[in-house]
Image 1 (cartoon, rainbow, N blue to C red):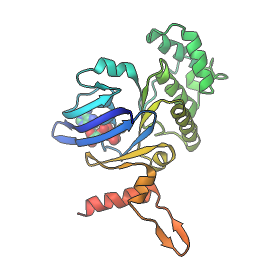
Image 2: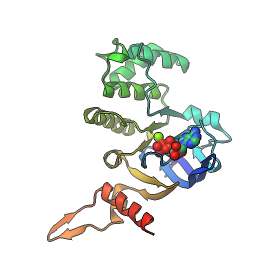
Image 3: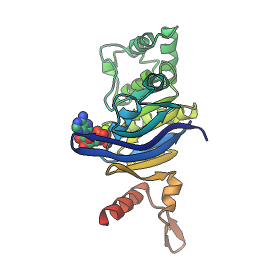
Image 4: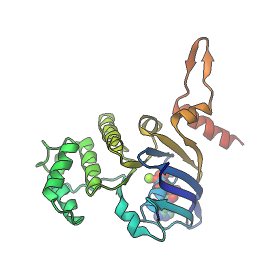
Length: 252
Ligand SMILES: Nc1ncnc2c1ncn2[C@@H]1O[C@H](COP(=O)(O)OP(=O)(O)O)[C@@H](O)[C@H]1O
Ligand SMILES: [Mg+2]
């Protein structure tokens, strides 16, 4: 199994606060990996380290075969990042935003690249409208399209649906699934159990500075045998699993 991201013993402190206390996980090529954790758990800190924007305090992280600390340039060539807050320029149209990024990345045919992306993300009809007129879902789709210009092998989506209404959230989910179907490795963070459940091939739960559990939804469900009610098996939801784990950790 080819590994896209390999994280071992990752540590990070801000002043006296130890946010990451030895984080370990692997992401496989082509999968959707969800890092699940509550607000302040350290998700963005991990994303910033993996995308070379922040130095770790200890441990190692290898992205697309390159160490983030010793080889950040090569890591940057292989990845893209979409943050919690959109990078879209509101004054420009969707098309102009895409052309701008394609030019910044020194691609050969920026217009063609923009047209392809607009088509792929269902934004052709809105291409020549200012991004400020887009709905939340359209804006996030444009944001993801911008991060895909240049065909990165691994994309990082930090809370891609936080702040979106339910309809826009479903739009983004669809986009993420299509990207994964196209072979892109996707590392996403979320506070929403349902999002991880809907999208992820594998899920890691970050809690109090460590990964407390990691696996497929099926594997996580196996940790908690279904309660049998007469003849009907009830499968635990990810939320029940999460609460049971957190409860166990905090109870002792
Ligand atoms: N630059 C910083 N300086 C000090 N503390 C920070 C800084 N960035 C994040 N933190 C703290 O580290 C913790 C984890 O933050 P973050 O990685 O943003 O969490 P998440 O993305 O899971 O919400 C939080 O308690 C946050 O307040
Ligand atoms: Mg965050």
